[in-house]
Length: 175
Image (cartoon, rainbow, N blue to C red; front, side, top):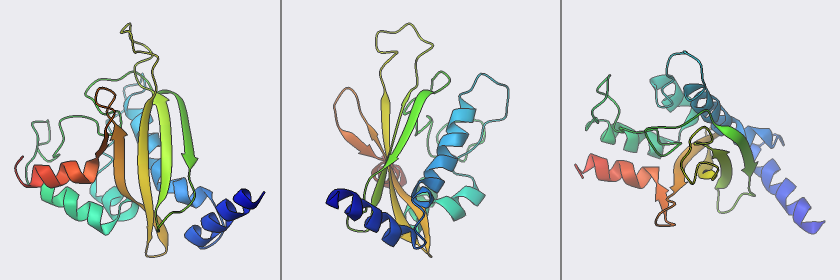
């Protein structure tokens, strides 16, 4: 019972108004766009890093790293993205996302980790098609609202955690 009280107190302190859902709000918007991008429909691709989202959903540090990396666009249709893959599904191909779950951890040192799990290859016949992909969003408070400070994917082959901010820093250095 004490642990629940600590979690609730952390969420209240983080959100400023006591709504735990506020912590996941920027993550939910990004995941809704990603889910729509990979759905079996013909809707336009939603850029999770367009100007309006950068200003509202991401931390100042994340935005600075993104803008520095964007000076080195990957080969793509619009020539402005520093990535040639979907940073959420961690690849260029995916099926409609299935079994998506989202959970916010308690605030630790000013950061709340929101863990998202989903199956990205369920429509495929590959051996690991039913495996879950895990993405961890590090959410901080800036200007009185929660914003994404980093997106961390788990590399299945190496079991390493890959920080998107670290990747953007390497891209900005031309690596």
